[in-house]
Image (tube, rainbow, N blue to C red; front, side):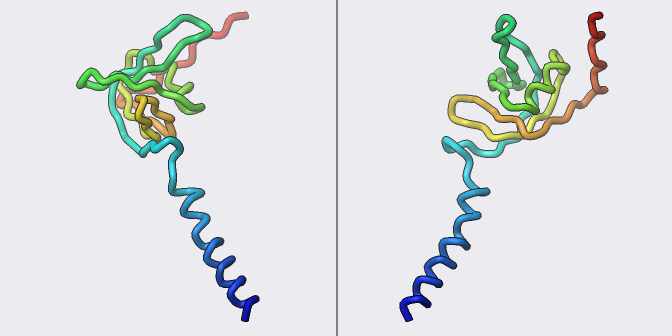
Length: 108
């Protein structure tokens, strides 16, 4: 009987763990879709990628996908990611309304 109770408790724990692993965002962040203009602020090597919405709100974009947005400076994009209380947005994906910018020429 005791082994059956232990088995049931373990089964309950295992069934609940995926909810915590995949459903929660760190620091209370929530998924959000935002549209705005990409701006790069700061000086190399300490630049910051900023999204400025039509309402004038500014969001700091972070993550590997956000780095791809550097090529879209001064263009309108739609970004999707996890928004935190301090206006950081960890970008999961993005779309641009216009054509994809060309890569800058490489130096030789």
